[in-house]
Every structure is written in C-alpha cells, then in structure tokens.
Length: 421
Image (cartoon, rainbow, N blue to C red; front, top):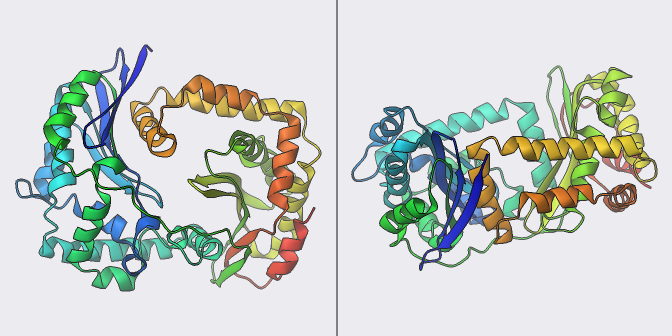
C-alpha cells in the first residue's frame, strides 16, 4: 500500500495528522487526548471515563439517538475509550462520509450538553459497568495491582472510578474537567485511510479552530511500590500477577524489554507457555506484558491456575525469569523479534491502528516515529541486552496480586524471595 503521513499544527496548538492509504474505501478518524485517569483530581476519580460516556449523550443540536444514528445510518461505527493517560473518540466510515464523521465528533467534543437527566441515567450505566468489572476476577486482580504499585496517585486508581464517587460526582466537576483538559494542545485530530491531508486540515479549521489552546495538564507522579495485595474469593481459579518496576516508552531499553516479554510469554512457543502449560499442565492461560507510560512502566506475568497448584506454579515462573538473565538461545531471540516485526506490519493493514499510531506517536514523542526506526530498534536487540534488562527487572522486589482461594498462597515476602538474583 502506498502511504503518506503528514502533520499540521493549527494556531491554537491542535495537531492534525493524516495517513493517506491508496486503494482504501474507508477512513478511521477521531480525537486522541493526552489525558486520562491519572490527570483527575483525587476527589473525582472516574470523571475522565464519565465524561467519555456523557459526550455521547447529546449536544444542543443532537440528542444521543441523533449522534449514534448519524453514523449508523451511513454504515459507520462510533466509539470511545479511556485509559490512565489518554482518552479517544473515533469513527470508522466510508470515504464519502468523512465530513459527517468530523462534524459529529467535533460536536460531541466541543458542545456536550451534560444534561442532568442524562447524567443521572448514565451514572446508573457506569455503576452497572463497575459491578460487571467487580464480577470479573481477572479485572479485579489488575486493579488490585495498580493500587498496590501506585497507591497515592492517579496511576493506581480504577479507570471506572468507585461506586461512591460516581453516585455523587456533580455536573460542575465534569465541566471543570473538560475546561481544564479538553484543550487544543492536549489533542490530536487524526485520520487514516481514504483521506487527503489538505481535506483533513480544512475540516480541522472549520470545526476546531476555536478550541481553546489550554496548557498541558499536570499529572500525579509516583514511584513504583513493591508489596503484595490479595482478595479472598470462593471461585474455581486463582488469578495471579507478578509485576516488576520497568521502563517508560521512550527509554532506550524499551525494545529489549518488549523482546524479552515476547520470548517469555508472548505466544504458544514462549518459555512460560511451554514450561508452565505444555510441560506441566499448571495453567490454562499464562502471559507476560509490558505496560509503559510517560514516566515509568511495569513488566508483568499473569496466570490463572488451580488454587491447589499455586505453590508449584510460582517457582517455575521465577525459574524462567531468572534463567533469561543468563541463558537465552539465538533462535528464541529471533522468533520474538519476528513476532514483533510481523505485528508491526500487520497493524499497517488496519486504518484504525494507523490512526491510533499517529496519535500516540504525537502524544508520546511529539513526532511520528517511522516504522523503519522501530524495526531497526527491534533488530538491534541482542542476547546481552536481553540478559541486562532481565537483571534490571530483578534488581528490585516485585509487586504481587492474587484474587481467588488464597489458602495455598505463600506470604508476599516469601514469593518475592523466589525472584531474587
């Protein structure tokens, strides 16, 4: 596919980014804002996610049905999400309907009514969402981990907020959050697919030139806390996460960490899958992950296991992590690199993934990082750099979180001791 990427910054600071892809009939278009849960006031935990919901509930010229039907009448798709550091509103439409999508999205972003009746109703919806999340132990274990590792900042707070806060969060708190955070300098307007850059800039000038510039939002910052968090539940599986203090996404060793995670727990051929599931049958699911953010990050391993077998599982996991500080085979390294390279290329076939990539590049790095640069950094990872990043992870005690029957789970200090070099 032919590809051109262009970026223009409006006078108010809003960045407009396009990725024109020849031969496509559709466009993914949206707003990505560099604000999320960690930018909330403590007393308003959940406001970022509640605002995201409320933007779909009407403007002075469109009610909630008009917003959704405007997209679906033309076969389009409209959605949004909130993370700890970002919020996104996006649509996927045929190329003939890009103007409509930009109009609807801009109307939502700039003119949300935050109607009190709709707010009361949506509070109920989010309380249901919180309840659903609390019923899912694999969600709960990660919220427990977040609170353990960042107990005093927005990074450790639940994205959905708490039921107590959501029930009472007033409309003025939402208005204040929007006023402070939904500003041009925080926002990227991006599109990928059957779109020309000049047309996208024209849409931005038409709809967004009056968006206030604002300032870059402040955020709570906190060092990683080791320790143990657990919740007793009478369920069939025990859900476990072991997490280590890791790197922000701009760190030079970030790609070595990604390769390490892939070879340890990135697929059916990974060490953890082979050693823990295939050879010993200790789990149904086990995986590793990298969760990087602007000023820190975590490397973690998740497993769901029979509660009776946790004492057998944890030493095997620790053994594999300790081994990669000194023993990694060349074919493992090459396989992990190939998986990451293939993932990068496969993303290029999705205009939604490409629009997201534009936005996160600008929000995280203030530039578009060429795919070849990413490939070069993946290719540059060596056996020595894998050993080194693994030793760095293990230099400090992990944080652990468990949800399920806890009778056979050892004390946190004893578990942490398994991961000492």
